[in-house]
Length: 73
Image (cartoon, rainbow, N blue to C red; front, side):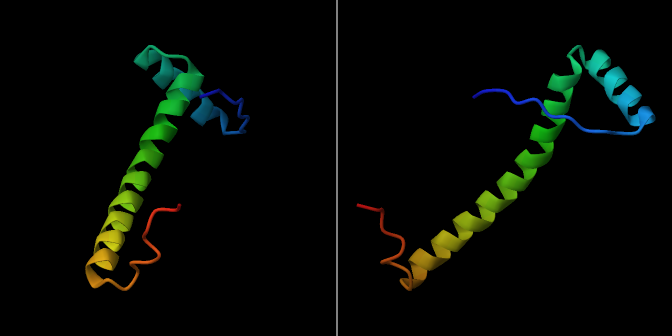
């Protein structure tokens, strides 16, 4: 997995707080921000996965979508 450069403008106080938090964590600012974003989005992915898994289970149990749930050939 590669890395991409992102640019964002934030208020000075936020930038200073982020730099200080990164230093406290012993990582550079990019790594610190990547960890924050990963933690934030991981929770959302987990919720989506759980809801989707339940949908698939319900669909399989009902038999209503048997043709649609078959693996592609």
